[in-house]
Image 1 (tube, rainbow, N blue to C red):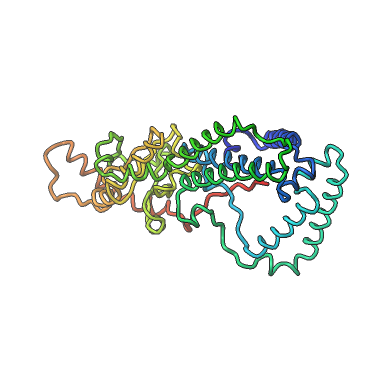
Image 2 (cartoon, helix red, strand yellow):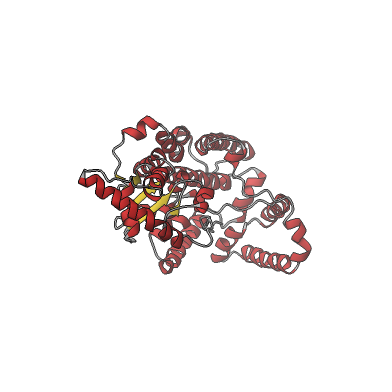
Length: 397
């Protein structure tokens, strides 16, 4: 929820929402029977797989929501924090967590749910959790080498297997459907035909059908980023679009007047941007235009937004991408930076001005701009240019 919140509610209201979400989460856990240790350990003994069903369903729902929200640009995955993987601490921690779950019958979340309704065993479990946290905190210097061993970055499963998010979603939903059928069979065998609280047989097939439909939806749901980038990579498509442009003369005039309503966006590489760019320009390569931190910039209707690259096409391609993303007031620099340099900064007027008044005035203006703009550009050049990575939002269980 983190990446969505700043654009919808303020920091103060965020705490209220977090409290309400926490209450709702606890209520659902209790209603699902997760405040009872017997139901929780039933997963390990094979007589009750409620835990698997609930958590698998929750994960699949969240995954499908992420796929859809990411596709429509509501959720920016570059802002979502992915926990780093330290292999050995994950394995050792998993063993400890698993043994604690089997022996105590609770996990940290469900223990508080059980304690809230007066379960004494849950209270004891919480006390044990605090003791474990205290031991780890005080003994951290002893555990640090193990804790940080085998750092593997922040891998995601779909990237590790070299597949798209949609394909991974499709596979995982099919795995879940198979798991649900399998555990239902195991429950029936383990309980020797006794009546158990599982989904009625009449509902299993329809629910399976719905799950398969969702799986196919996830599989065939194209990545918006890849789809749009492929679309604007078609030169014929870009050239046939009607996109507003700004001439090099108009840009030169606005720079000389130090127009505060002008917002320039340099879409060249960051190395090229560091070496040379225009006054007050910000850097954003094509893929960065999908980031949510660009939304406020590209959606600012009080600014005249102009994107530019080295040539005419690179600027128009970036403007076409902005248009495909729904930004209406983004134009591009006609001719790009190459034409701006040749026609403005490096302009040399002929010895004899042409007879045509308009052309003579243009030459006079360009001569003046060629004289004044280099100093303006040099004065606006920052002493140090740093690339700021998007800040990821922490969160999760």
